[in-house]
Length: 276
Image (cartoon, rainbow, N blue to C red; front, top):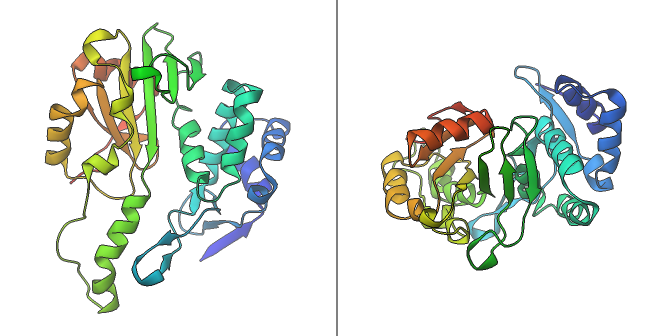
């Protein structure tokens, strides 16, 4: 069973849990695109947190569409995204961000790109898509200057498409009434990290900590991920992390010092929920 609500009420409730005042929350809410403000909102009676539904369905084989996880977002994550955007984007940057929020196909990506840095230490200085710091002037999502004076470059990706491929894989079993699905999830690590590590300068010529955070809806084979980090990613980034919620990460790092500094800045908890 679930309880329905208006997004404005759920937004203000989740904002209060994050320490925002009602006027602050209402101001952030009113900055949202009109279509987003009208999103259906609910929470399960057994469970925690409000969720809202806004996004494009996944397209499967034979013209079928899948509704569910890709369109259902935690309201708390939307609040976090709006806090970061309001505090750290210029007006020139805020306009295209709000346009992406209003686009069902890009909404979730825009939200996680902001919310991913919400847990950083409060006095962290942030610059969105700074110029001139990537390979051949590629723009990387965030330059973060930690209170302990380490600089980080972070690229964030939201890989919902892998859920579509997994849905296609398990379709025959679901349609046949099977109680278990044979085999393992299909995963393309090159696709998972597409347009990420290539943006960075080689690690040996930079004094910044460079890393990638990927939001994944399916589990990743740990052995293959470790090999991919060692053989491919580690030439350009000092760490690569997988998360499903932004709070808990499975992270691979080039050294214990990188791991310590990254954990100190992003204040995540360690998890194995995204690997098998």
